[in-house]
Length: 154
Image (cartoon, rainbow, N blue to C red; front, side, top):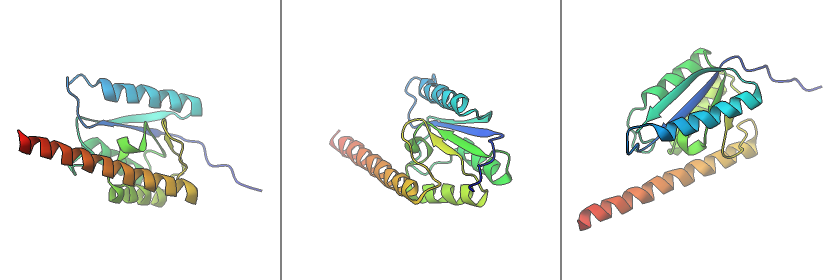
Protein backbone atom coordinates (compact mmCIF):
# COMPACT_ATOMS: atom_id res chain seq x y z
CA UNK A 1 0.00 0.00 0.00
CA UNK A 2 1.39 3.42 -0.93
CA UNK A 3 1.01 6.44 1.28
CA UNK A 4 -0.64 9.59 0.01
CA UNK A 5 1.42 12.78 0.42
CA UNK A 6 0.11 15.16 3.06
CA UNK A 7 -2.09 17.99 1.85
CA UNK A 8 -0.42 21.33 1.22
CA UNK A 9 -1.03 23.80 4.03
CA UNK A 10 0.76 26.92 2.76
CA UNK A 11 2.25 27.21 -0.71
CA UNK A 12 4.79 29.74 -1.87
CA UNK A 13 4.42 31.37 -5.27
CA UNK A 14 7.67 32.75 -6.64
CA UNK A 15 7.74 35.26 -9.51
CA UNK A 16 10.74 36.94 -11.11
CA UNK A 17 11.60 38.87 -14.21
CA UNK A 18 15.07 40.13 -15.12
CA UNK A 19 14.17 43.36 -16.82
CA UNK A 20 11.04 45.42 -16.23
CA UNK A 21 11.36 48.05 -18.96
CA UNK A 22 8.45 50.22 -17.90
CA UNK A 23 8.52 49.58 -14.15
CA UNK A 24 4.89 48.47 -14.13
CA UNK A 25 5.51 44.86 -13.08
CA UNK A 26 3.33 43.40 -15.83
CA UNK A 27 5.60 40.38 -16.34
CA UNK A 28 5.60 39.29 -12.71
CA UNK A 29 1.87 40.00 -12.52
CA UNK A 30 1.20 37.59 -15.41
CA UNK A 31 3.33 34.95 -13.70
CA UNK A 32 1.52 35.49 -10.39
CA UNK A 33 -1.86 35.14 -12.05
CA UNK A 34 -0.93 31.90 -13.82
CA UNK A 35 0.62 30.47 -10.64
CA UNK A 36 -2.50 31.40 -8.66
CA UNK A 37 -4.67 29.60 -11.22
CA UNK A 38 -2.50 26.48 -10.86
CA UNK A 39 -2.70 26.71 -7.05
CA UNK A 40 -6.50 26.82 -7.28
CA UNK A 41 -6.53 23.82 -9.65
CA UNK A 42 -4.34 21.86 -7.24
CA UNK A 43 -6.35 22.98 -4.21
CA UNK A 44 -3.27 24.49 -2.59
CA UNK A 45 -3.76 27.51 -0.33
CA UNK A 46 -1.21 30.21 -1.11
CA UNK A 47 0.53 31.51 1.97
CA UNK A 48 2.59 34.16 0.24
CA UNK A 49 3.70 35.46 -3.14
CA UNK A 50 7.44 36.19 -3.29
CA UNK A 51 8.25 38.64 -6.08
CA UNK A 52 11.64 39.75 -7.37
CA UNK A 53 10.89 42.24 -10.12
CA UNK A 54 13.66 43.58 -12.35
CA UNK A 55 16.33 41.27 -10.87
CA UNK A 56 18.38 38.80 -12.91
CA UNK A 57 18.72 35.24 -11.66
CA UNK A 58 21.93 34.81 -13.67
CA UNK A 59 23.91 37.83 -12.48
CA UNK A 60 24.31 36.61 -8.91
CA UNK A 61 22.66 39.76 -7.53
CA UNK A 62 20.73 39.36 -4.29
CA UNK A 63 17.12 38.40 -4.76
CA UNK A 64 15.57 39.35 -1.41
CA UNK A 65 12.23 37.64 -1.97
CA UNK A 66 13.86 34.43 -3.20
CA UNK A 67 16.03 34.43 -0.09
CA UNK A 68 12.96 34.99 2.10
CA UNK A 69 11.15 32.12 0.39
CA UNK A 70 14.12 29.82 1.04
CA UNK A 71 14.09 30.83 4.74
CA UNK A 72 10.34 30.17 4.92
CA UNK A 73 10.77 26.75 3.30
CA UNK A 74 13.58 25.86 5.70
CA UNK A 75 11.53 26.94 8.72
CA UNK A 76 8.47 24.96 7.61
CA UNK A 77 6.35 28.08 7.10
CA UNK A 78 5.74 27.01 3.48
CA UNK A 79 5.35 23.40 2.36
CA UNK A 80 4.98 23.76 -1.42
CA UNK A 81 6.29 25.95 -4.23
CA UNK A 82 4.72 27.10 -7.48
CA UNK A 83 6.79 28.89 -10.12
CA UNK A 84 5.83 29.84 -13.66
CA UNK A 85 8.89 28.11 -15.18
CA UNK A 86 12.18 26.79 -13.87
CA UNK A 87 14.08 29.69 -15.45
CA UNK A 88 12.07 32.09 -13.27
CA UNK A 89 13.35 30.25 -10.18
CA UNK A 90 17.00 30.12 -11.25
CA UNK A 91 19.32 30.30 -14.23
CA UNK A 92 22.29 28.87 -12.36
CA UNK A 93 22.76 25.10 -11.95
CA UNK A 94 24.54 25.55 -8.61
CA UNK A 95 21.62 27.56 -7.25
CA UNK A 96 19.21 24.87 -8.46
CA UNK A 97 21.16 22.27 -6.49
CA UNK A 98 21.00 24.50 -3.41
CA UNK A 99 17.21 24.86 -3.87
CA UNK A 100 16.82 21.10 -4.26
CA UNK A 101 18.87 20.53 -1.09
CA UNK A 102 16.60 22.93 0.84
CA UNK A 103 13.37 21.29 -0.30
CA UNK A 104 14.82 17.82 0.29
CA UNK A 105 15.97 18.67 3.83
CA UNK A 106 12.61 20.31 4.60
CA UNK A 107 10.74 17.27 3.26
CA UNK A 108 8.94 19.33 0.61
CA UNK A 109 7.58 17.12 -2.15
CA UNK A 110 5.28 19.65 -3.79
CA UNK A 111 7.06 21.81 -6.36
CA UNK A 112 5.14 22.65 -9.52
CA UNK A 113 5.71 24.73 -12.62
CA UNK A 114 2.98 26.33 -14.73
CA UNK A 115 5.02 25.87 -17.91
CA UNK A 116 6.80 22.54 -18.02
CA UNK A 117 5.98 19.42 -16.10
CA UNK A 118 8.96 18.17 -14.13
CA UNK A 119 8.56 16.15 -10.95
CA UNK A 120 11.32 16.71 -8.38
CA UNK A 121 10.20 13.50 -6.70
CA UNK A 122 11.57 11.25 -9.44
CA UNK A 123 15.06 10.71 -10.82
CA UNK A 124 13.80 11.38 -14.35
CA UNK A 125 12.14 14.60 -13.22
CA UNK A 126 15.35 15.74 -11.51
CA UNK A 127 17.30 14.99 -14.66
CA UNK A 128 14.90 17.14 -16.72
CA UNK A 129 15.12 20.01 -14.23
CA UNK A 130 18.93 19.85 -14.21
CA UNK A 131 19.08 19.89 -18.01
CA UNK A 132 16.67 22.85 -18.13
CA UNK A 133 18.83 24.73 -15.62
CA UNK A 134 21.92 24.15 -17.77
CA UNK A 135 20.03 25.37 -20.86
CA UNK A 136 18.83 28.48 -18.99
CA UNK A 137 22.39 29.25 -17.84
CA UNK A 138 23.67 28.87 -21.39
CA UNK A 139 20.92 31.12 -22.73
CA UNK A 140 21.82 33.84 -20.23
CA UNK A 141 25.53 33.48 -20.98
CA UNK A 142 24.89 33.75 -24.71
CA UNK A 143 22.77 36.86 -24.28
CA UNK A 144 25.42 38.44 -22.07
CA UNK A 145 28.10 37.73 -24.66
CA UNK A 146 26.01 39.34 -27.44
CA UNK A 147 25.27 42.43 -25.34
CA UNK A 148 28.96 42.81 -24.42
CA UNK A 149 29.98 42.50 -28.06
CA UNK A 150 27.41 45.11 -29.11
CA UNK A 151 28.69 47.50 -26.45
CA UNK A 152 32.25 47.00 -27.71
CA UNK A 153 31.16 47.83 -31.23
CA UNK A 154 29.35 50.97 -30.13
